[in-house]
Length: 124
Image 1 (cartoon, rainbow, N blue to C red):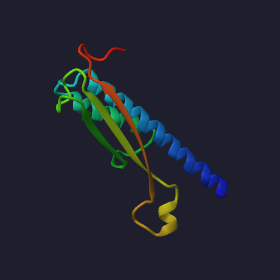
Image 2: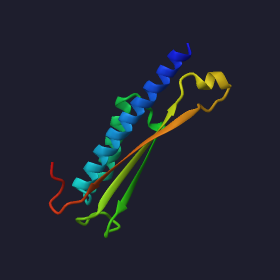
Image 3: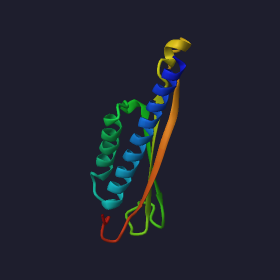
């Protein structure tokens, strides 16, 4: 039984790791491609929501941060670097039923991806 629980826990953590990496990479790439577009932030959030939902994680478990590194604080100038971090709080299987806690016990898993804003948009 402990081995089965370990396998469930590790597979949940692996799924969260893959989801966070995919979400961060695609959101950073999208933001770097069109940093000045009005709907880019909403599209990046939708990208993160889709990537994490595809792996079975509720949006309430996901946090995202966007950081700008470079000469332009708005991150629209070429040479600016956008870093997107996605963190998923992975609930441990059956942990809340074992501890009599209303709050599930979770392990945070995060991934960060950075892309530079180029002069002509992001090249593929």
